[in-house]
Image 1 (cartoon, helix red, strand yellow):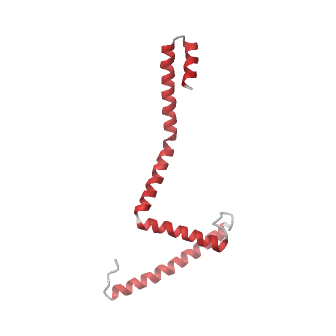
Image 2 (cartoon, helix red, strand yellow):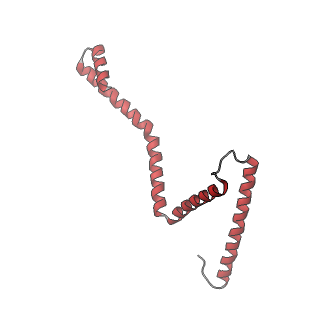
Image 3 (cartoon, one colour):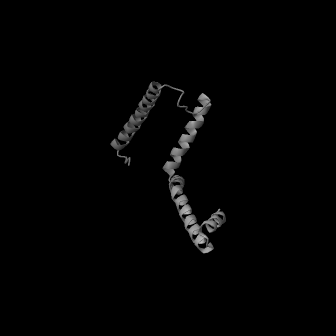
Length: 126
C-alpha cells in the first residue's frame, strides 16, 4: 500500500523525495488512527485478563465461578437448556426472581440464627 501511494504521489508532485515525505506522513497518520480506534478493544482485553487473573488468585471469586458452572450444568440436566430470554414473560421472570430471593432470605435467616446461637455460647463468629 505504501509503495502504491508513493508512486501515485510522485506522478502528482513530480518529486520522489516530496512524494516519499507525504506518503510517510500519510502512513504515520493512518496507523496512528488505526491504533487509536483499537484502543478501546485493548482496554477491554486488559480488563478481561485482569479479571481472569484476579479470579485465579482469589478463592472466593473462584468458588463463585465454580458455583455458576455447577448451577448451569444442573439447569441443563433439569430443563435440557440454559436460560433463554424468551422462555418466560417479564412478569414470570419477576415472579421467579422473587421466589429465588425468598429462598435466599430463608437460608440467610437460618444461618444468622445459627451464628447468633454460637455467639451466645461464647464462640466468635467473625
